[in-house]
Image 1 (tube, rainbow, N blue to C red):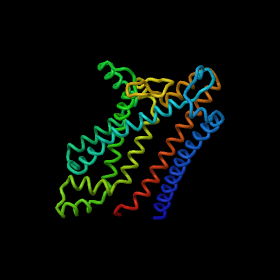
Image 2: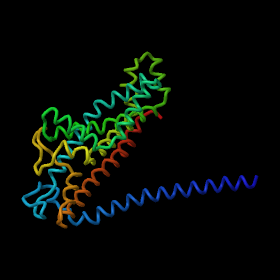
Image 3: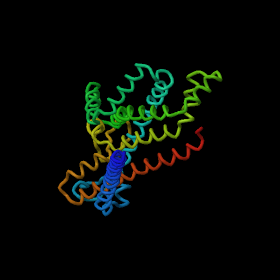
Image 4: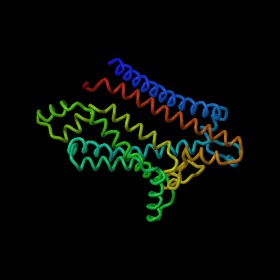
Length: 286
């Protein structure tokens, strides 16, 4: 009996050590990334870099900024997130309301998980192939569509998991009062799970704005701010990639400043999702 007691406590101690070690690795990795970006990028981060487009000789260390990449990234990520939401939310509601435990629902969720795991470069190659078939050039529209495809399975599965956490009594009570399944989905489920849905949308947005491989072929890159959907568009991840590829130390330092801007945007989105989830959670039934 005493031996079993010791063995259980030793096992518990080992699990705690692994847990603390994993936590330290996660926090340490985040701190190291933030320190590297701040240490190398903060000295090069100026107001002109945020408010100006690249001037002549920018990639040789001369004047200009990355306003084109900032606006291009926001355009593509916002557009892709809106398109993904238009398809993701109805599909997630349909999965939960109509085919939740069916075999078809299982295969739909499995397909979404597979799409989630596909590398983003594959989405870019797929979009590039479609654009060639349609005779299109690299453009802002191509970047928006490919990011929508990238975010669609992420957003759908995240919203689906959020909706599945809703207390079943609410749905049953609504149906008992004479509501249809569509009314339950639109008037009960969305309102009840709105904090989690908002979080899922912002997380998908953060994934889209930080992805480089998917837009490499379809959005192109330009030093100008896009003026139409058919114009090429720059992005922050590609700005980091192109600036790090130059042999000039000053331009490489600007790449870290670009990475710092992108990191700040992603952090703001992450904290914003937490804040909105907390605020909206006050109006839901526990």
